[in-house]
Structures are given as C-alpha cells and as structure tokens.
Image (cartoon, rainbow, N blue to C red):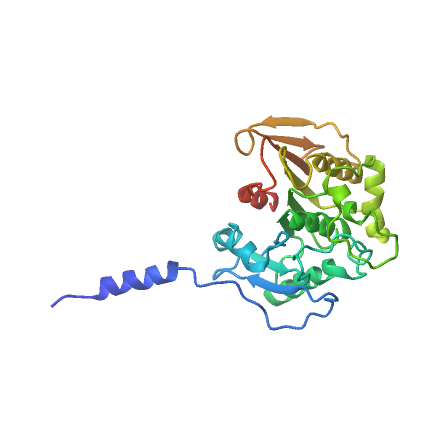
Length: 300
C-alpha cells in the first residue's frame, strides 16, 4: 500500500507558497475624503513587522485595477511584505487626478490629495504600519500626484518616484489662488511652456504647507523620456529646478551615471546620499517603462 504522507506534505507546502492575496476595496468610511477618492488596497499574505506602505496612483484613463494589474508592485509586495494602496480617481470623465485646485495643493485643505492621505492613515492604524516608511509612485497623472503628495504632505511621505510627470503646481498655474476650480488638463504646462526659477518653484512647494518650515523633506526620484509626446521632456528639468530649489541644492548634478538603470538611460544625482535623483530616458515616449526595482530601492 502506498504511503501518501510525503505527497500530502508536498501539496500543503505548495499551497502555502501560492499567494492568495488580491486587490481589495475596504468597507470603511474615511474621516477625510472630501472628493470621494476610491480606496483599494493590496495586503500580502505575509506582512513585514510594522510594514512600509506604498501608494500607487494611476494614470489618466486608468483606474486602481489597471494600476494593480499593470505594475510589479503587488508581486514585490508579496516578496518584501509591504502594503500597496491603489487610489481610484473620482473624476469619471477621464480619471485624471486633481493636481491643480487650491484644496489639493494645500496641506489638509481638501482635494484628492487629502483623501489619499486618509487612506494612508487608515492603513497605518489598521496594520500597524511604519509611519516613517510611507512612499508614493505613479506614472503620468499618477506622477503628478506623486509630486503633489510629497510636496504637500512631507509629514506623511518619506519619498516619491514620479515617472513622466510635471512639477508640483504646474497644472494649477491658470487657477487664481484660493479658488477651488480644477484644471484636469493644462496644455501650456503639458507642452513645457511653464517655466520658473528654482527659487520660484521651491516657493510653490513651501506655500503648499506654510507651517512646515525648513524641516526634513522626503527624498525624490523623477524619470522622463526624451521623446515624450504628451508631457514635454522640458518638464523633467522644471522638476529638477523645483526639487533642487526645495532641497537648496545646485542644479548641476554631483554625479552622472550612463546606462542606468537600463541602457540609454542616464541617472543624475544631486547633493549627497542619492536624496534627489533624475533619470533621463533616451528616445522613450510617454509610455515610460516603470523601473519598479528602483522604486523599491528608494524605500530603503
């Protein structure tokens, strides 16, 4: 008679290796979600102790499900034990994020940004997450929201990685201060025609949270393709001016590394300890490949 015990043990071991976690929509009413941003989350089967949290806002015409399906972050979450939040834009017309209104661009005033921060706070409290290790990354409109969240909520986020975005405040240029209008698309900004000095961009960031002062700021990575046909490549250098202005760094990199992280991409390091990095992707269009490993490295 066959002894099936070894086979059963192997089957049980295999089942344990199969990840059962999936994208979930928590049945909660968030305390501060004025625009009713949709809340989706991926919690791996095995969490790290005091897990880090990564927020991954989607692009225009996308949604939380497409961000979950089209990126490697859920898989990396299962590998490293961090939690991924996938917000879903309440803008049903084109699913772009509000990165222009005075509410979303001002600390604790409202807009989509405050709704996302509320998701972070709920997640940290529910899963005993590490408030010192909250990060955000996105592409296109999600990259714009990445810049917004890092700039408006430096007390919440430890770092951000923005792929093919624009500087914080660029889409809000045509909206008078203290008005709640939302400009989901700004053609002048998209074309790279809105340009400021580093000091002017830095003042935009500081104005987003006037009481924050000169305290510690989150680290930042930005990526952009030289052939971007949607958000002009010039926007990369406006972002460089903005963040070097915020960090009070020279606009001239301290290091330039060719073919990093892939061939024909160039990494520019500003200041020390890789606190601010810019990546120029030669001949890459707006459909820029997300370098998920670089994002995860930024969370260290």
